[in-house]
Each structure stands twice: as C-alpha cells, then as structure tokens.
Length: 98
Image (cartoon, rainbow, N blue to C red; front, side):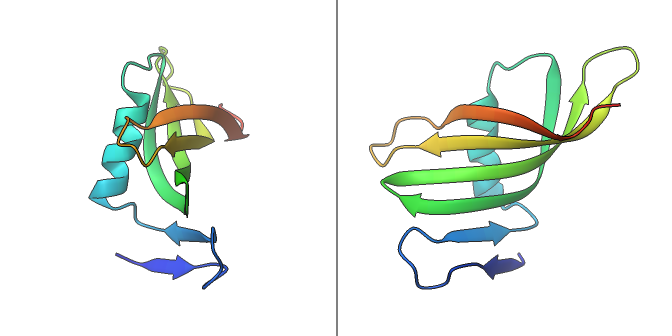
C-alpha cells in the first residue's frame, strides 16, 4: 500500500491512500449498499479521524444504461465511533459522465 500523509501531526489532518486498502473498500461498499443506477469503483480515498471517520473517495462511476456511460465522482462517507454502519453523505460528479 502506498500512502502519503497531508498535514502530518495535525489533529484532524487528512491522509490520502492509493490504492484503496481492503478495509477502506469494505467501508465504501457498506455505505453504498442498496444504491442502484450507477456502479462506483474506488480509486483513491482521503480520510480523517475526528469524532468517527470522514472519508472522501474518488471513484470511477459507470451508469447502468445501454451505453455504460462513465465518469469520475467524489463520494463523502462518514462513520461514527459507536460502531454504527458508515453512511453516504454526498456524491459529486467531478468529471462529466459521457
């Protein structure tokens, strides 16, 4: 795993991970469980330890249509320290789906 750290030593600092570890893929899959219409494949993740975890994933997005339209998206996922499942907060297209 290749990992680079941003804002090292700062509480709440973000860390970038690429490729995405199996642990972070599991969080991604749990948060997107039941989502239909677009398939997302995580490429990189930026994460932050606060009161729980914040994740910002960059993912390849493939729309479930006849032409399998593709693009990139940013997905914001949060998980609480209490052990509740991670939940999807937002999806933002960052490269138009063509």
